[in-house]
Image (cartoon, rainbow, N blue to C red; front, top):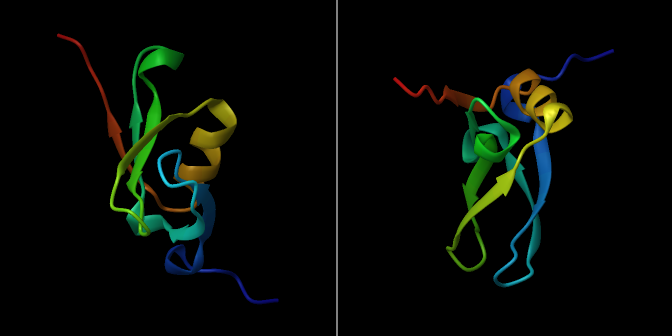
Length: 78
């Protein structure tokens, strides 16, 4: 059995602007983890139209993205 590397992980995504559907590798995504569900999200740039897309990320999405090597930023309020 071959173990996938971080660079071989791809995620299915969709753009709400152009309605494009595509797959993105982990480096194309960013995850921001805030104190609440409202401030936890992932983002990417649509490869079809170039729109900046930001979507909410629940616990399951956070776990999937972090385990696949998506860069993560923790948001802290002083």
